[in-house]
Length: 344
Length: 212
Image (cartoon, rainbow over all chains, first blue to last red; front, side, top):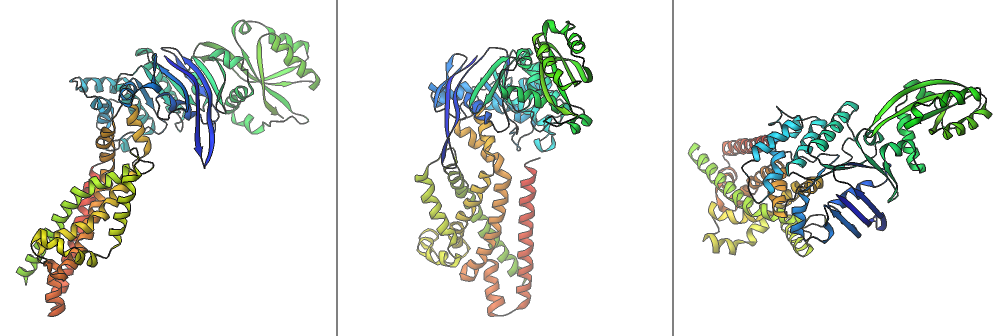
């Protein structure tokens, strides 16, 4: 559905040339939710802005629905963009229009007038859960409501693709989940392809089918969600997963956590079990044979978009010399392990 | 006295609103043109932007009296006389346009660039961006700018009155300065303050009403 081929972009920042995209090649299939994650300073927004040519790449091809957008005239691009919806971190609603009129905007922009404007808008208002807010102005809405309006507006021109630019940033936990839930519903109901860029691992975990990691202008890793979470290949990916896990720790553990070992500290490990290792008694065998005891902090089955994975966060207590070989033994049993830090 | 004051007030209101109307009609498109032809604007065109900007900056900095006297030949050609409140409309409009265009330009610059980009992603043409996004979004601030311009015009019209164009300014110079009837001065002042207050209140009321 979206196919990027060797996208390169050089921008001028403070009078020096910066290469922001260094040969991005990426394929997003019809109907999937694809997530691109990067660190906050990764400049990941440059990439998504290249897909609808808000910014033009210096070189490379942007194919959307088998049409090369970079080769289109400005008139043809205008039409093509109606099939690519986009929502932004800062919503960008028109303050001079109420909810209904904001959602109707894309329909007004079309040259051919349709008499179904009202019913289309009404359907979108129902779909996004904005019933009763039709005549509110953006200044009277909460942040998640504004994002809902932005989503409805993006859907009004009946797009095939929805681009999401860090749309849950600044929302609290509950509001974030509600928006992600809405995106999922849209993906299924309308068979919409969704591409989102984010800095937030939890967005990736609860929304995406496939993931790519963006780092210093390149895609350094690409995988299905489940495989990515259990077998990250690069240091950057491991750090992202680790910091997300750390953020989820209970507060009393978080305050005791240090990143380097000292005397009298025990490693805090995050174990993830997938597939057959979920049923295997591998963990207890290893613990017994290395004479360790474990203190479980969290353990749950984490639902991820493409299945389940078992996640356990535990303190490993025992002889320091035994811990390293124990970890190696666990890795052989298809349990992947990360050291989150050390607790006393 | 009452009759005189009412007639002067009428003249002032006529001068101010007629020139205000022309300023709106001419200044709004020019301010818009200035705003969209800047380097960051979406119709970046320095061939248009620079000369316009220099012209307006220069005329805006001219003292009103100098401008008014300088355009007397033009005024006489158009209005047939250099006196009377009809003649004042041309110099008043010329003085207010550079002031108003600047406020329009600023109001449009305050529309976030992201809004324009969002409209682009929805498939809006440039023309649609102007009349569906830029103008409606900037309207509250443009109206506040117009209010400010009209307040200025009241000030200018007083100077025009002193130079023989009637209105409250004319009354001030005849009855207040030459004859020194102080009650005229006082009444005129009170009326002016009330007029300015009224216009500003109205302007802000309309501007705020536009955003719901």
